[in-house]
Amino acid sequence: MQCPSCQNTDSRVLESRAADGGRSVRRRRECLNCEFRFTTYERVETVPITVIKRNGNREIFNRSKLLHGMNRACEKTGLDTSRLEKMIEALELQLQQRSAREVSSAEIGELVLTQLKDVSEVAYIRFASVYRQFRGIDDFVSTLETMNREQEHLAAVS
Image (cartoon, rainbow, N blue to C red; front, side):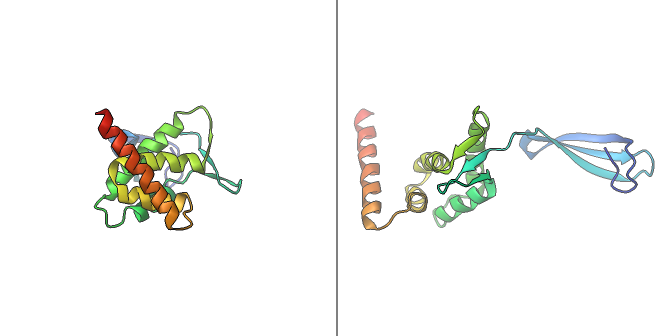
């Protein structure tokens, strides 16, 4: 590891511990040349996921963009950001475990909707209205009727 102070490549590890909920290792190091102390992080390198947008464009999966959209859908619903972050972590892990490195934005949207449906009906409708590009009241009514039928079916089965 190269020292940020003198660029020497010899250092020793003073301390190591788990960081980021066990997804990375934080190491305190000391340069053997100038004794400068610095911190490094070691993470598992993952192959980036490419998202295929509706218009055919491709871009790298951006969890902060997804979190922003989910936060907007969950405003004033009582859902905190940490819960949304856990949902995104689960979604990202699910995508990483696939053999395909490309996923459509439609598929990501459906995965988010599946998670939101169990957490908040209001957030589900808000997210669906943007993701599915609702054009008017009929789209809202249709979605609400579908949700209502699904709940009635689940109640009848239980």
